[in-house]
Length: 203
Image (cartoon, rainbow, N blue to C red; front, side, top):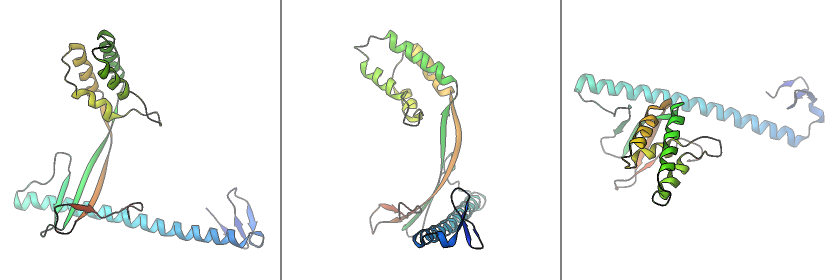
């Protein structure tokens, strides 16, 4: 933290530097950064408060609809879409799971490798490429869960392949769940909705 002690200011290495020896442009830059950070923290706190209150309000409304009107809102994962009476605005509460794999993925990969080895390369070259792509890691060294799980959609009746797909399904674990609030406004008189940005990049 940038600290001022009497006529000194602490630098990035923790040293106390006399204010008189600091260039005016450096002091002006420091002041600007401090002001922006203060505003950012206030905005962050406001967004956190907004998210918390909106989730609480939607949760209360869902309970109200179930208890008073015997109407169940939302899907299995708690996703809820609320639309204003005139259809102009729409609020979406979304829950998204982050998936990962346990050690069972290695067993599935071994079975898949055996399948690819047993099949003739010429007849199944496109499947071989798809499998290799699915198990490739990204720049951060992570495997794409989407690409791997897409292998289950392949219509292959081979017994060993089916065992591999079972091992693949059993290895899936929910690492964490994230919740989102998205607010939309209808575009004119169309049936299209445009998101009201709640992030800096989208404003």
